[in-house]
Image 1 (cartoon, one colour):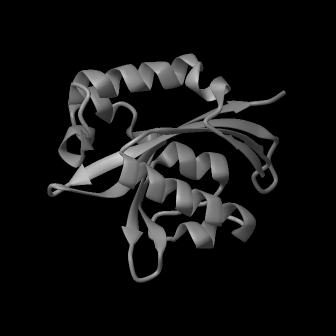
Image 2 (cartoon, one colour; image 1 turned 90 degrees about the vertical axis):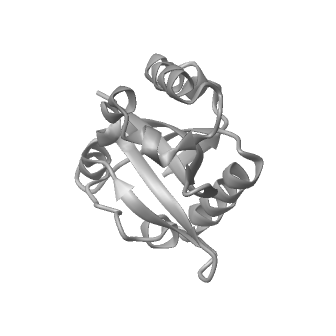
Length: 151
């Protein structure tokens, strides 16, 4: 797997732009709240969403939710697993630090990458990750992942 952080390709991808415009309409520029994820406007994206909660004891993020599109694309259900369990160590440390930065700075990070899931063709993936507030605290990161299959 290889990936870029804050990729212009991702920032300019029409599907990512559409998602972010919808989020902005729902949140009116504020941090996305868990209750809003379940709104009619955002529910249509649920198959391509991941939610990861920070575990202070493990200094890692545990995936609370992984949409069915992501499970299918990566040939793995990551719900209930930690980033360190689902990603090679040389990449997981970067994702964990980036997710911490997202929560602390309340900013979005844009990823672009290519990977080859077990027994499948290479895929290009685009991901935007942002802070998620639940019960008045930002302790989670929500990500929208879009996949383009290469021919």
